[in-house]
Length: 228
Length: 228
Image (cartoon, rainbow over all chains, first blue to last red; front, side, top):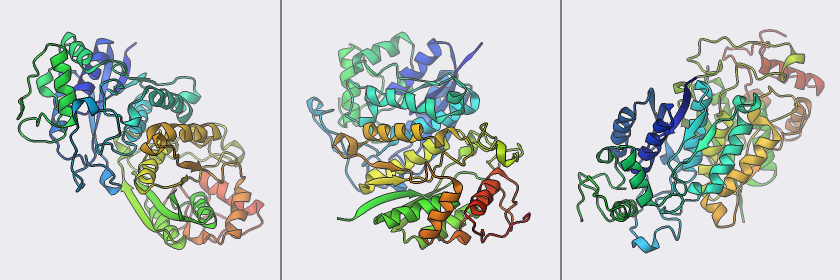
């Protein structure tokens, strides 16, 4: 019988490698993305390309208005500047780009989707090694959401629980890049920069982590950068 | 110092009594409701009235499109009929009105709201006694979400966790009605019927539970009913 997975696809590198991991594991893929008030929609156009490239059976893009709450420099309504950090300082403190409860909201919708299509798994590209110190990217958090999913749903009551799969959780950014190479992930169709310009800025935390990953994997990032 | 609480207000009886409980406990109230594709918006106009009556500092009504997923007879896009049950059978099985992951989604947004205003508590009107067998109304579920909230947020990392408060969790519907009387809840401004007609139908599970509550509390429900 076919296995079904809901894959959270942001358009970034990590979620792309995650979706291709689900494909490799022979899941039928149901992609889910959000228009949540991010500063630019470049990510979302990449999410569409990745969903197509991975052969998703369906792709839901859900508008949700996180701007109503605010609280993050990553939201387009924010007047707060996105602060860059030297690469050695990334991950030491929760940065301004943290969006309150974002992964909990994303996983909740993925859970609703999973339950309606009777999916076996939810794939999410969180990572706790070369990461930005977001609290909702930690292994304990993912484990706890798994337990919550069991209690929250009809599936759980009936004895089937959707698995929360985070295949990149314990990988370095370089290992993620190498995994992506093995899985033929079209890196040029992903976008990581917090800014949505024609070229990636090469300075924000997200660009720095990505560039560090490619560098340590001895690979060239196909994206154009303003700064090299 | 003032305590702040996010109160999930649906417009129904339970969430109204819950919000007035928060007020009694001297919280400043920040109300949160959802336009999620329910069959009628009568509930939402009641949510506005209750927010006002309880003196909420703010009231966010968030549109979220649960219809994209479907899976419930309570959604307006559903072609499924809402099935009525004899009152003795309510709560024995998960009914068609169950909306996949709804409380998880609602609590996730409440968590985002709570974090951005640095709230001390989230109030939710779930009830596990005279209830509809929804899995996400059970005490274990609420306890688990509390633990998740601690792991998910910057507040948690910094040592402060928002409390998930469900003051009706262990009350019968009659006890909820009596509590509402003590707190001067304007019952006429609440709506429980799954159908959004001029009068409450008096036959759906939600009406039956409500009527049973008033009857056992020896109180008269001020709402007009099609069937008495």
